[in-house]
Image 1 (spheres, rainbow, N blue to C red):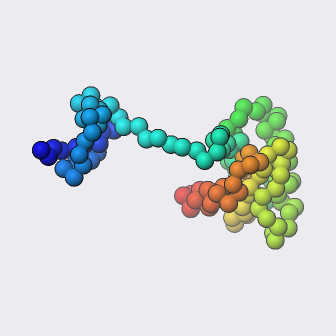
Image 2: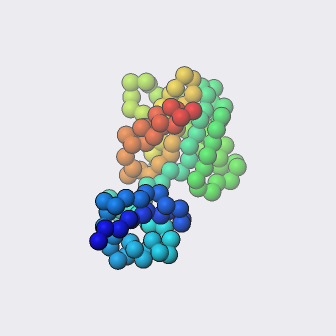
Image 3: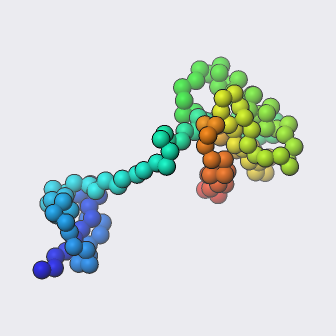
Length: 139
């Protein structure tokens, strides 16, 4: 016969429908209220990594900095200074990607603020430019 299926997230039902027919595993999860885990697959062997995000004005003053790798304060100031010198002097008709040490900096200028991200050298630049644009829209 027909029965109602449910999708649970930490014990709270999110979706109930008679259109789904539960397999034995889904019925067991329903009884135990175990959250359904989604399988995420990467197209590459390793995940992408953002090393840091910087928001700097044209004078070089850092307005926001978020580091995802551990750095000493002196090293952070040095990195901020180097990144600013690197991107502020570039011609606007050049690309918004530049190599920095063994990584890549992707940046974009919005109204006097430079939004820059340091990522792995093999990561997709256009995806990070889109990420910066999304971040600006959110702000």
